[in-house]
Amino acid sequence: MAKNKKKKKTMAQRADRHALYQESVQDSEFELDFVQNTYKAIHKRKPQTLREDFAGTARSACVWTKRSKNNKAWAVDFDEEVLEWGRKHNYDKLKPKQRERVEFIQADVRTVETPSVDVVLAFNFSYWILKQRKDLLAYFKSVHKSLNDDGIMFLDSFGGSEAHSTQVEKHKLDGFTYLWDQNKYNALTQEMQCYIHFRFPDKSRMDKAFSYTWRLWGGQETDDLLREAGFSNVRFFVQMFDDDSGEALDEFEETREVIDHECWIAYIVAEK
View 1 (cartoon, rainbow, N blue to C red):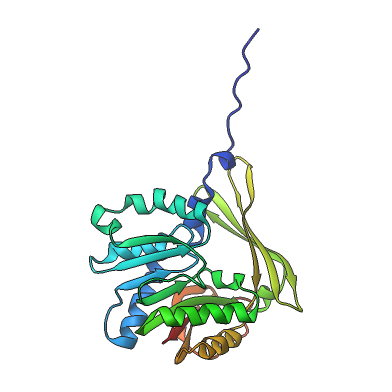
View 2 (view 1 turned 45 degrees about the horizontal axis):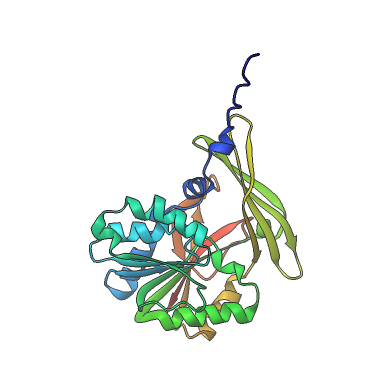
């Protein structure tokens, strides 16, 4: 009798969800360019110490330490599993001297204690997990306390009519397709249920690779909370669009007015 052949795993079964996330969602080099250039424009010096909140795989913290021998970083996340992945795939790839300048911390970002830093990051809309006003305010107050006197907090935000509706956005990348699924939206509470799915050329799927339950915080709401937490100035840098094609550009311009695009993205820069 012939032996049963072992069934070959699909591309989805072989794929690593964290690696796919980093490739499809994170552009740490671009984000850190913005952070460094904006900080220098405001304070006439380069920032050196950085804390990455809701750090996940701590990719940005690790990239930060590679940029300069003077840079130090702390990566904070509540999820030990994703931090451990980051240690194995991002931290372990650093040179020994670079590893000495980055620290992983499993903790709640609202109560974590770290040395004072120049910059705190909360990107990829991660702070939206704090859906109650008191919780987000407590977090902003904690960040304000942890910053140096000339410290800056960097966040991001999105909005537009598409942000208030259910939809699936697809992006074909090298070797897989990334899907952003705004699965449910409560217009009264502004709560969102979102998923990230991945599709592969062999027709296999990785459904709900990541799941998020967020509150869609508006720009002015966030501004009000940051100022209430003690920040002296809040700036918005909004993504620009090509005048002819309407395509989004990798350019962000400071403004307090956003045209009613279907979708807009902005960086929020809060100065202590």
